[in-house]
Image (cartoon, rainbow, N blue to C red; front, side, top):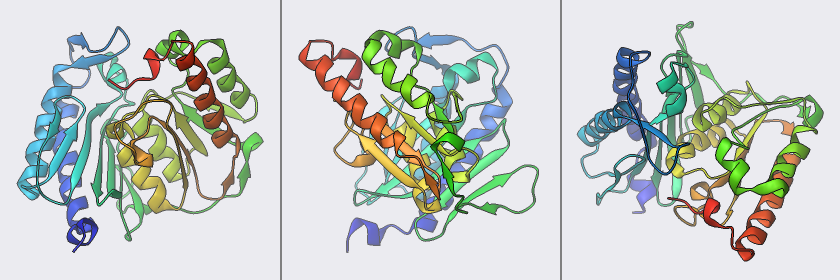
Length: 298
């Protein structure tokens, strides 16, 4: 029996949703209180005590349901397990937003078995939206304003000039690491679409694409705990997922690579893939010139 066969997506999803509910309850209780900020890699990488506490809450909930699971968390790294399922956990995606009192942050978790994403949850407690999906069971959003969840995946025909794109690129750090050539790629893409918005949370941006509320999203420098949950949503909703190496990553599987693009069902936006290809070329040239530090994952 393969790992995928041994892991029931709905059982896994139920554990993830329960973990998300517990983290969401905790974050609602501490949001918009005084938050002490620490730094990790640099001045752009904010972390708080609530990131660490939320990850512990999630780990306890996931392990209570699946004791032999492996967990890879943003804050505490890998917790080994010999079961078929690995969870990639971001306790607060959008920590800078959370610390500032903005509502655009989320708990995000993706489940992998046999190298494939089989379930995903993005829970944005202050926005009142829980996005979730399991392989073969559809992608859904439960909102506080509705009694019943809405199934995602209705295709809408739309081209680039009509499209709203979500991205955090270029960030403040990107201005230092990518240089004029990389920033020019972002500018060219921005000029080819209806509009570009930065929500400050890759998980929420990808979930909005799965829901069809935005047409596409892309990013660079992502880690699998940032994106795995959202990518599972997009794939189960029938959207398109693209990836790019960009000289880094936490593995060789497409959803583990730092460059990503997602496109909502029915949309035709080839500019997303072209931009990722161009950025990969820029990264390779900068590495040759000895400026590759910005593309290495921590």
